[in-house]
Image (cartoon, rainbow, N blue to C red; front, top):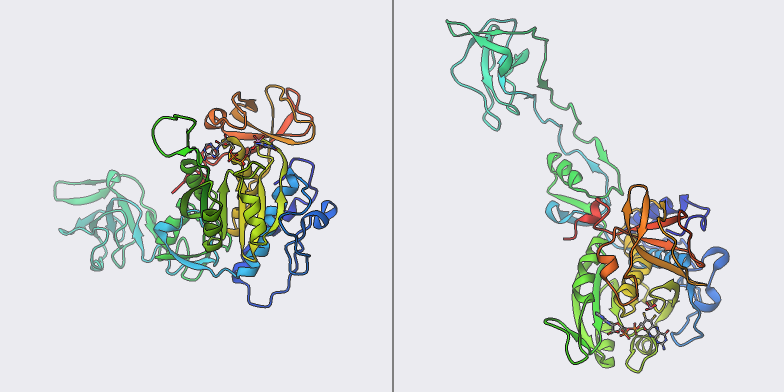
Amino acid sequence: MTSPGTRADADAEDLDVEEALALVRETPGHGSHDNGSHGSHGRRDSHGGHGAPAPHHPADAHHQTTPWPEARATAERAARTAARAARRTPVAVPLDAALGLTLAAPLAALTDLPSFDTSAMDGWAVAGPGPWAVRDEGVLAGHAAPAPLIDGEAVRIATGARIPPDTTAVLRTEHGRSDERGRLHPTREVVHGQDIRPRGQECRSGDQLLPVGTLATPAVLGLAAAAGYDTLTAVPRPRVDVLVLGDELLTQGLPHDGLIRDALGPMLPPWLRALGAEVRTVRRIGDDAKALHRAVTTSEADLIVTTGGTAAGPVDHVHPTLRRIGAELLVDGVKARPGHPMLLARLKDDQHLVGLPGNPLAAVSGLLTLAEPLLRTLAARPAPEPYTLPLRDAVHGHPHDTRLVPVVLRGEGAVPLRYNGPAMLRGIAAADALAVVPPGGARSGQEAELLDLPWATGGIGVCFT
Ligand SMILES: Nc1nc2c(c(=O)[nH]1)N[C@H]1C(S)=C(S)[C@@H](COP(=O)(O)OP(=O)(O)OC[C@H]3O[C@@H](n4cnc5c(N)ncnc54)[C@H](O)[C@@H]3O)O[C@H]1N2
Ligand code: MOO
């Protein structure tokens, strides 16, 4: 997704998802080409492409920052290229683990629904016009096949129970009365077939219930279970390893002696899961270049996320490590505040690294700018619909960079929050969204694009597990 007005080809978003889905089913030898450049803004010269023919670009080359919309597009394209390289095979996932996955096969009914004629109400199954003689035994849901009724007979029946053969209607409990001889009378007209759900009313076995590409919501899991599924065929979750850098980090207690609490170790894994990832490991590796090298080169994840160490300080080991392993920097700094030192590197055809800056809000900015489009595309999730709201207050802009500013959504507007400095989480913790403030800033009342935060969308993103 990009700032409003920066992208004319809105349909491309839909194509991206379909393409990602096609990739999980793709057979070897698929020849579609992606050179990693971005139209007229292509950065092939400065950053190299990530398709096979593009020149290799080592991590120590001339540094040039990428505009924010383009950084997002690059991350999305990188994921498509990786998915193509990996030919990720769809997986069969038990229903209780499938929430948030994307269907890699259509959901076809494995049975008629309902699978037998069933009562829609508690009452009596009746045969022919009343009054009826009521049988002693009743019919409950989940029990053996009931005996046929004969004309003039009724039998107690529960909602969901099988309809006895030759039943003509179901009479609701509140619409029947018994006379002194125990015979059942209707208290209102009985229509033939009323309150009977016929077999196959919702679907026939083999009917397509949902297409490929559907997001597995709680309702989809329910439908799949009803239709006879134990597992869903889904696009696998992209695997992520998180490496938290920094010798100054404590994992418990109060900050002391120049040491601070690690805010990113607790924050990133659930956030990454909300973005569709399977977080395999979270490792704290200090400012140890060797440990970072070992962790990066032994990782089998689709995406490695590092935190800290992206700038040019004496213990900032991310760039030197990428250089050492010959990684290709696709994005090396973004015209975004906070978070401008964020980076995206291709380590292997099917493995990437997102380097998040250590300042916590800068890390969030990197997460949403680079990790979100990459993970969404690998998971074949649809891009969220871009939307804008007017800002309730003016927001100072950076002269050249896009700012991401925490906001709360109130009525039809977005209220910018204070405490939005790169090292602060106080604003984002209270926020519903991030407002995308273009270079130069925004006036009060000006429309700004919003990036919803997963806990505020009320959608599937609200499920973090
Ligand atoms: N000479 C320059 N210095 C810096 C620049 C620059 O362009 N030139 N950019 C600044 C910006 S902007 C950012 S953002 C940071 C990025 O720094 P790093 O990614 O190298 O991160 P660190 O130096 O390791 O840490 C920065 C800051 O964040 C704190 N931190 C790190 N990890 C965590 C964590 N897990 N939880 C909480 N806080 C964390 C760390 O203690 C530092 O205070 O560089 C600027 N410098
Ligand atoms: O990018 Mo840094 O986030 O400005 O602090």
